[in-house]
Length: 187
Image 1: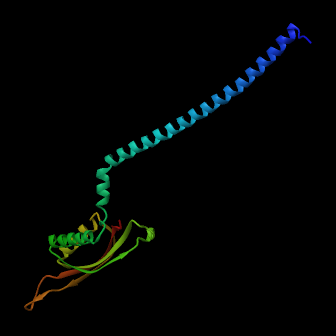
Image 2: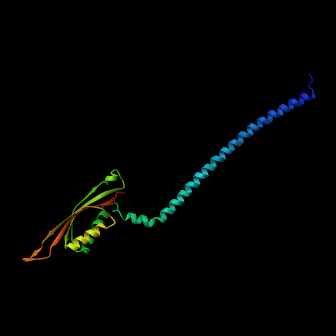
Image 3: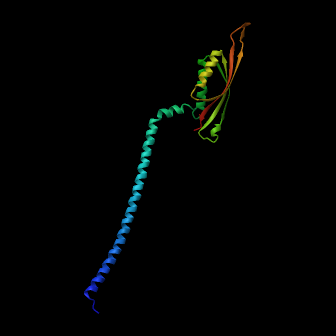
């Protein structure tokens, strides 16, 4: 059985067509895998460049806000008892500059009510007594309220005491019981 010329061409054409289809499927698969790989690398590069850009922005923020961060940090009593002692010493120096006697009655720690579970800040509650002339006591109180570290004055009670020396009535001395709180950093 001899195949005619047209049948041979038909079979050869069918084999070439099947070969082209198989090669097309293989090529398309390879091309799709390469495209997916390229897309993954583009996504990784995009994410990496976004992270780098965020890092640069964060570095710029850190350097540009240094003075603001220092100012904010100065609004709190620092970590440790040494910083608490320094704050008390600054109160004593302030009292001395106003010529009043400062007596610290109590110092206590408690969590900030709005942030009871905070691991960052707590309140130090002070109860102090200040004794001196009216202008000095009142000036000390005004200056103390404006200290950057004082968070809240919760109570002030004034009392006038007449001073007697040698039977002569001297000028009145005043005493003020002051309750106030400052915010202390825990870490």
